[in-house]
Image 1: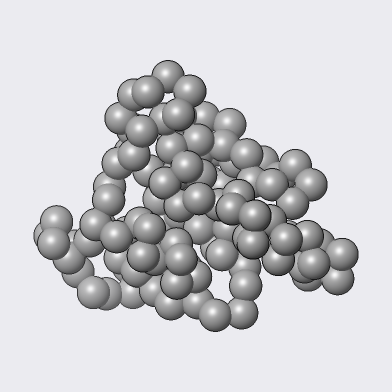
Image 2 (image 1 turned 120 degrees about the vertical axis):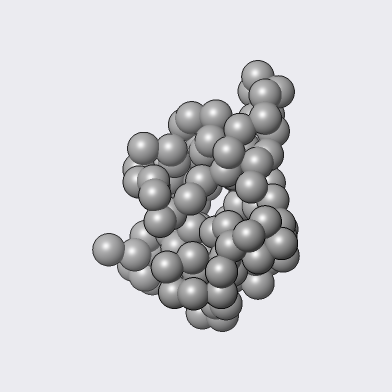
Length: 113
């Protein structure tokens, strides 16, 4: 989620939630903004808005961002069922997030390298 959460305030959340047997260790934690952290919650899956199937959400520890998402202007677009479901679950294209991302793009601070 790092490219989605590239804003100043970040926290970590477990990729496998503690409630589902995950550990609070560096191998299981990912930096994310507070909004993504709260929206992800204990979810391991989400619904792909295109075909309405339940899929496992994106795991940045195991998957490559560019294989599931692309950046179109300031919008993060899911290109696979996993990408689309994650984008919808985390609401990555809420108006405020797109506006912040646009400011970062204009300041050449987004996307991160």
